[in-house]
Length: 191
Image (tube, rainbow, N blue to C red; front, top):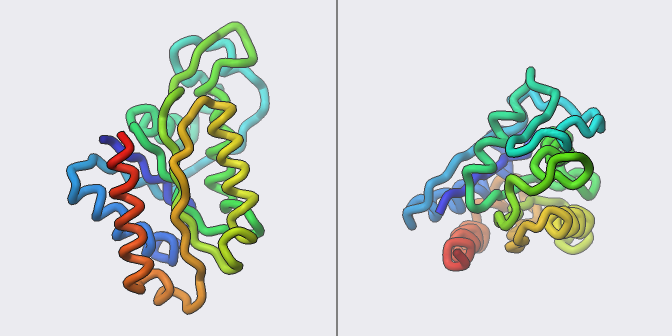
């Protein structure tokens, strides 16, 4: 099984990266192929809302071709499961991940002369770190991703999250590490 982990944190070695380490390790231990993409160091321009991609059949077709998004999109298309690893800032993901999510239109050909989907049926999962209690902190983002999946005919696989109560140490506890590993095994078992 192929996984594409999109690291949405602006801190490349912060809390979300720490929580994602045992998750990725468990995937690899169990034979999964993992592509790990940090978004904070990528050039991700916002969607123009031009709908030009909706008239390009069989490929992504975005008119923005001078940033890193086409390469990221190709890795997503090659994957079976896309994992959104993100801290929750003001009840949603940070700007680079949001910009990438907004650029999904070229994957769904719903609004123009082109038809079909480049990623229908793929799985989406979330790994989140947050300050408030889980439901209050992650609810808006998880709801948004569930709607995103329904709209794009993707399979929402669930979320694993840990609350930040002691900075990096919160994500190194036995509970956090074992939970991340168990989440990886659950995703692998639902091929």
